[in-house]
Length: 156
Image 1: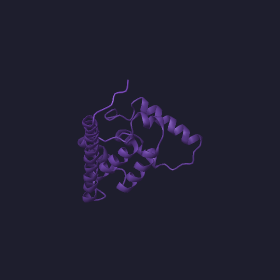
Image 2: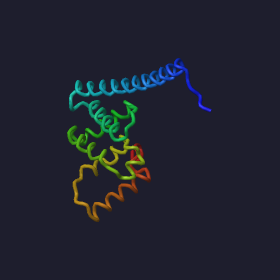
Image 3: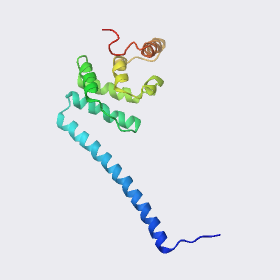
Image 4: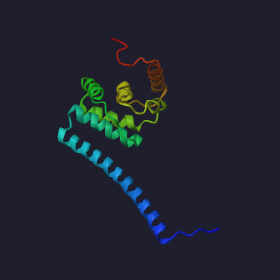
């Protein structure tokens, strides 16, 4: 049995579909506005600010994962300040680029987190030819990370 819809029913269904699409587009627009505001804030802060580096990390994380990053400013700023004691801002940015380019299962399990980046920042700076030494170093780093060796407060 074929059921035909009246003109008013078709119009109502079309209206419902358009409303759903409108709600979806508004959500995308809000997310876009949030990201744009973060990027404008990044530009306004200047390239060497700790907050700007956290925002650089956020942008990289969102590109890599496709999700929205939820900042924990006290933790994230503290981590970035600690990293800035050892490395210049531009070097951290270079290493962030390498970090988000990794396909390593350890990094994937960690969800490309800022904590994982901080744990690996030293190895991300090493530019070595792949070989047995590099493989052993990476394997050792993974083992230590899995045992919690790099967790904060473990070695105070």
